[in-house]
Length: 165
Image (cartoon, rainbow, N blue to C red):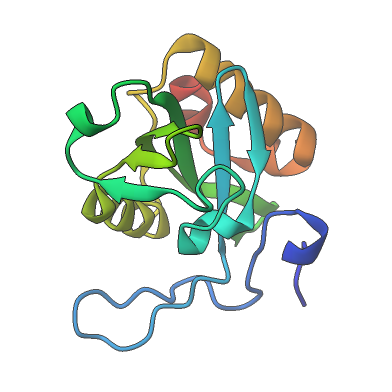
């Protein structure tokens, strides 16, 4: 039974499948417990399109790994949120942030795809990596996680709560 349906804009979780990542060469990755959040300044929102680099802000953008090719880029963050279940119920298990810059007018963007993939993997491995976010971005993410499901926030680790304090 799924706790949240991704079609309704919620976080997803797999019941009974809490250890789906087997590591390198171990078969198929199950991404059904991972959701993507976009941070745009002081706003954070769920956008499942980011799972395939097709969030609302990423659509129609030609990507480069050279930051100098996007001189008027606006900073955005993709945050990978992995949800799991413990004895207390569902909780935010892994939360990792990835940087990108987008110039909507020029339809150009900067990001390191390998970093985005690795950070998604780290989230699936239940890591918390949000230290690169500034205070405004942390506050936006914390607000989204708390308001989306207060019980999941309460069940989450002290590490996550301190990282977003």
